[in-house]
Amino acid sequence: MQGKLLIAVVLGLATTLAMGPTGALGRGPKPPPTCGAQAPDLAFSEPTFIDRSRAGGEPVSVVAQDGSINVSAHAGTTHIYKNPDALPGVRDFLMGYTNQTLNWRSTDGGETWSYTGLAGTGQGPHSLLSTGFSDPDYAMDQDGNLYNVEIDLANDAVYKSTDDGQSWPYATPLAAPGDRPWLTALEPNEVFLYVNLPKTMLRTTDPNMLVWDRLPEPPVTSKSVPDPLNPDNGLIGPVDLGGFAISGDDAQTWTEYRFGPEGDDGGRNIFGKSTQFFGVVAADNAGNVYQAAAGGYEDSHDETPDGEVTFAYYERETGRTNQQRINIPIPEGDALWPWVIAGDEGRVALVWYQNLAGDPNKFYIFGAVTHNATGKVTCKNGATKFEPPKWTVMNLSGRPVHRGQICLSGTTCNAESDFAAGDRRLGDFFTVNYDLDGNLIIASGDTTLPGSLTSTGGGEEGEEGEEGEEEEGEAKKPVGNPIFIHQIGGDRLLVNPIEPRETRPLSSPLPFQP
Image 1 (cartoon, helix red, strand yellow):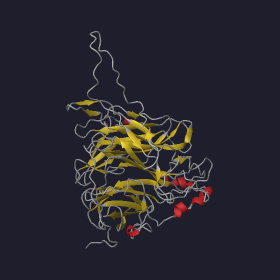
Image 2: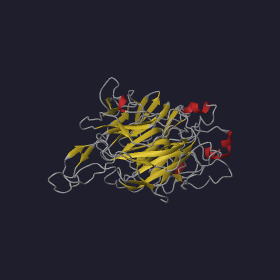
Image 3: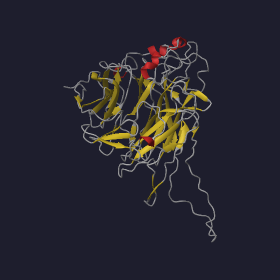
Image 4: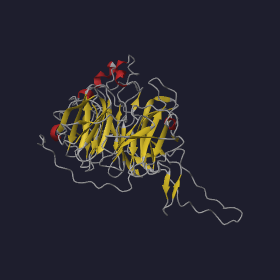
């Protein structure tokens, strides 16, 4: 991947150990410590556009067992920027629009991307039966089958790929009604559908996904992840901000836990300011559970730089959790919309959008990574010690991915009479993941391509996004476009890479089984 390396800036928590005399006996300098946590060393690519001609808000990603990276995004229907000046760029909304979410696949680590259409083509709908322009979410079962979901503000349609995302022939047009669905998959052909409103949990083991069983209403409030300590039957999901729940019996029953100290507030004060719609959690390969908050950006008129990013952990083996708030050191500015991912034990990454003091209408992608997220450090001699997590904090995008205000009112942003204050082109979140090598991958919307038909904002999929594409005051596009950032050096979330298998053959366009 071309582009300059973004060099890590470690803020605040990295410690420099000085050498010096030991005292009156004059025995010379102290030897260096034999054990201690270090902030990770990281390097990332510049952001590149997955597609310059299609919408890309709220993107999610999944890495198939063959190593291919799949990204899915909102088709833009409720993310449209309604300023008439944006109309010349409406082709991005119309391009390939089929009332379905948009999907892309890369087989070269994000260097290039192919749009996924019907039966493995780059055109048309991704499936014949499903419908829904928004709210994608991926899951992958133990056999490597991929799942995605989409809605039309009422129906939750789920579709499936058995060929690593090359095609999506299996689909059910209505698994459940409701808004903001999330998927989790465990054993082969087993997928769970959680719907946020009305709160519903369903499960299917039908290879064709035509039969869904309704489960008891769960306590979770957003996306669940597989439990690494119970991969066949276990799920872990957030309970708002400050808590989580674990099911060990395929979402039939749940046990709730809290981050932070026990008390009347249930540990909620373990987090600071929070501007987010979904309190997601992550679980590392040892089963430890993590959650993050990012806040300070209160609404589209907020220009006070008082943001903060906070973090909490729960160690499964001991039940130990941080008793004090963990503040991740960030530059002065405002933060919003965190997403968290975990790899091997103690290795955690989170991302968020942030503006900087003095320039509140430029938003960047920031990230933080630690390799001792529970404070636990294992020494070479096998001894264990505890010290606060060491963080590497970076401006991952290096340039703004959005210029202007961000509306935080969901679909009601479209009713805002002030066009700039009602800008919802980024959607409500963006995501971080990692590839089979453990390198971080970030998918985000980006609104910086100019909207004029006479501009140079067009181009082929996968082209790089140079800084300053959109100038101040230039016409905006009515929707954002999807971008991709890839870790290209340094410490990874996995100690040992995952060995990829061969790519599966393209599925038949009519895959139904008796």
